[in-house]
Length: 263
Picture 1: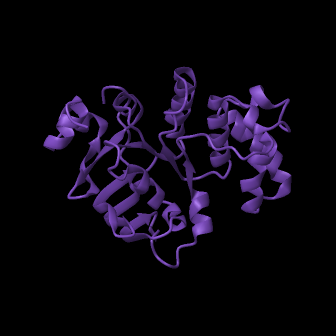
Picture 2: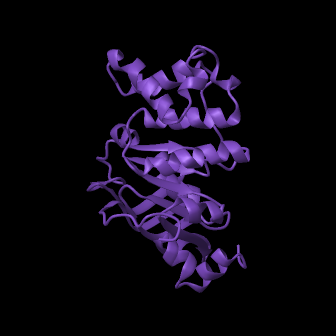
């Protein structure tokens, strides 16, 4: 590959087949088919309104929280049918974490922000302090906040808040991390720090990242899926390795999009 070493052959941690999503009578996604390789970073790109964030929310069933949202098709995570009635959502959301576009720390102390998900998932109290320190070190935040863990998280800068949210998600040791434009609300320096953190995560987990920044997708990710609105709903028009999609796209729409002449 041009910007990184060629990833080793791997299996797919997520397989999406015939995914359809609608909000009431309004379709959002239609017949989405995509595989997500394990321990790689997959970018979801495309113009606004083509269902990228909706797609991300389906993967750990956050769409369940949206009134009148209907989902059909198959989303398989490590052999589990995510969309089945028998899927354990509590366990799923521990294994498939989420970081949003705008940093969303709770209006609590830094320590409490980190403790809440750990206590909710019944992590033994004797392990919590160690996990908090380890997770904050993972995102390069420990030395910046170790002396003010009991201060409000809302007093952190935007970049620090986003790293706190990353640490909070990582504290549960997820196998997949979903990132919805995690750098778009940050200044360039903070965005570079978060981008570097995400790049290093591929060593241990799978990352699916929605981004409008094609340059970011090209330098950061291993695989790209181009979403586009067709017949009133979003779908995948091209998917493959980052080099294949940017250098040799098969779809005219994807070719025009990555070249900057459409979208």
